[in-house]
Image: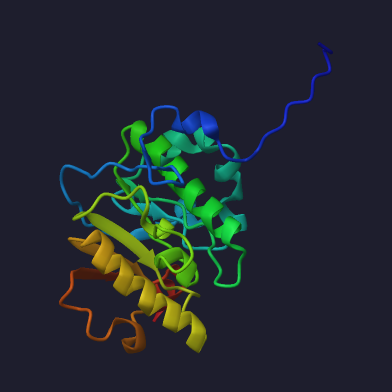
Amino acid sequence: MSKNRILIDDGFNSEFVETAIFDGILEMPCLEKPRNIIIPEAIIPFSKRNQSANHQAFLAFYEYDVCFSDILRNPEKYASEIQTFAGMVTLDCSLYIDSPLLVQMANVYRSRAIGHYYQNLGNYVIPNVRWGDERSYTTCVLPEKFAFLGLPKHSIYSIGTYGACQSKEERFHLREGLISMLDELQPEVVLVYGAMPKSVFQGLYDRTRFVNYPDWTSSRKRRAS
């Protein structure tokens, strides 16, 4: 074999799911249900972690994918830094409603795989639940709702609305996916990072306990005023 052997990184971090249990025909890595439900004191975007001294907060990834692209490639690089915070919400890899189905499935996988890795290190990990179009949160195409694969029922979850409910179509899928999530996972608590428009959440407030967190920009503006 040549000494100049080329190593190909497929980007899916298979070494980080060696101890994982897999769910469904797509074999999504599973996240464990925490023993106790912890409501974060605050949620800080990963890219802003050095701008806050509040290490009782949870880190989250509700921002452009490029802001956390390095953690997708090299999650072990940030392991010790993430452990200085009270916990984390798993990666919010984009599932645009016009993305190819394969891309949507791959980004759910990445979020679960890296979430499992950090959970395995002893971090308190809250699953981020993200869906795209109806193919991800219904069985209209696949026999499973892959947006929810690998997640325990009756637990705590987080969703992000920041930048995800600008158009009528986005609000439609956000609401329909949320209803499907409530039916499928039967959550105890749902953290909401960003606005909670009535067009999305109306009639759903009694389905679970929603805990709202303003996005980083809005919270900075409030403090400044």
